[in-house]
Length: 263
Length: 166
Image 1 (spheres, rainbow over the protein chains, first blue to last red):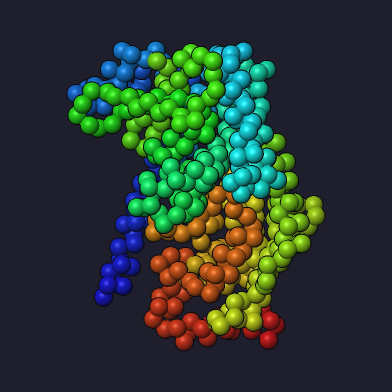
Image 2: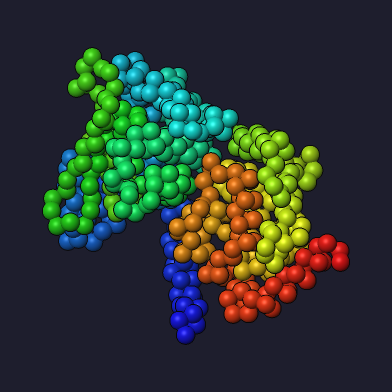
């Protein structure tokens, strides 16, 4: 009887999937990285009186601009990397830019220590290597991030950097994943390495630690409080003479999604 | 550019598979002119109905491989709960997340750019040995696998004999 019942329930899975597919197609039609805009469009997504509407209003009082990232499950990595490359251009010639570049270049060695084969991972590094070059411009950056293959390869590489950070410093992270996954390796192969899988707090912390950058997340959740911010600072910060002068990468979190904000 | 990276990766994997071929599996491009279509030969795992069979499958790689997985199709089609009537293989490692027809596969191994042809083929061998009867690629085969194993085995064995030309 139970088996029959299970079989009968299947069409409803199909229906759910069909609905998700429609939503997905809508999301996938948006640009990978949108233009920098005001908050009008974001505000229009929510009804007046809604808690999200109220928080966007609060945010627009503090932030100067917003940049939408495609809702494809890769948004955190894409948003972070675009914000990082943009900051590298804006802070060109500073000690911070120099140290961040070193960290990014060193990440190739870290992937090898984590057991990845450089024959495979060096191909994934190439587009990021170009995007952090001093000779880059904001036009080139926008163009590169709009090309699926380049943009996705950068996302793929950052996923592996995240995975390597989790693997090599497992003592820091294990406690947060062991209730849902038997091992760090299992977590990585399900929640980090596959493209399109959404990120959580642990991924953000790992990225901040791996790259040595401070990530500030404007937290647009449904809680009935004022808009709050999560400041994620690296445990192994960059070695800077004047650590106070480094840029912060600002992201906007909504349930299931990350965009870029400029504060 | 993407095509060039995909090609480089496929050539690397082909070389690796040629040098260190896993037991019971061979795979490689059908023609040197097109590295994006491969033929794989898989021996049926022993102690299963597929034992002694040698099955041919075509693997087709997208130009953004390995960001996206290849597709795999048995020719001729194989009677199996996780193989569609037209021969297409339906297992989690061949699906990018969000493109998964079976939501309950969340716990199983899935495609990522650090997976490989070899891992796919090894997963397919385990799939032959242990079908996932909750995946409805071939509903008739799933039902028969659950309720009438003898009949299921007989159909498979007839297919095995066909592949051997018996």
